[in-house]
Length: 302
Image 1: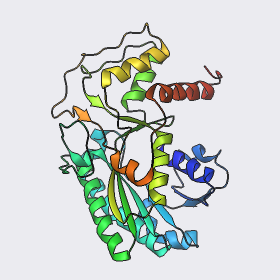
Image 2: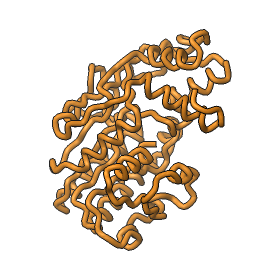
Image 3: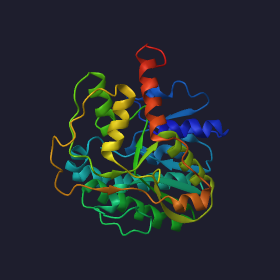
């Protein structure tokens, strides 16, 4: 989802783009309407072959791939697989160096912080990941920073909070809510009092693009909207866009153990370094998703 939005942003800005994809990816159809990109078929385990496959110099390398994603339970169950991603990140950085890139931008995660109870999480907030996914992301970012220094490259590790959009994964809260409500079924939740930060995919892509264009050395950023609202409020917004009369099951479940109750990004560092600002209100982003789904189903714009 973020990758597609970033490709579109780069092409809009007139960049020459090499998109590294898996041959057997079920998501290649998403790239059909992006004119001008050059597809490079290469699995994450084969990143050492990228300089040969691309065959020309590059300025910026974005590393968004991560093997073994999916639901939180799925990715955290595979400890070995998560650990392997650290090596794949270093392979990507080495390939970037051999391609002549001066800047490497890697996708980190808010999971690197572990459990926090602060109004907004800044890049300087201490990281204490408690799940394998967050631990591997944190290690990958630290190792990438060290290797980039050896190569004399800029390395930006972007800890992404909750990004949503038209190609969101089916297991997310937003997709779950939309699917249930469209079927006229009642979605069920905890009391949903968690304060959350959602960022629309096009805004995330613009931030990543601007981060890659600057020259700040070796930095960590937190990427979100900078706006926090209770999850229940987001749920009601989605419901109201579909049908305000539909019920939602708030409080149907208890909070899970070690539930994250505050998850908001401090985006002042990105703003200061790049001038970036998020443009899309949550209400508008949800309407775009609904319009896209309606078009895909042949119903025309709602």
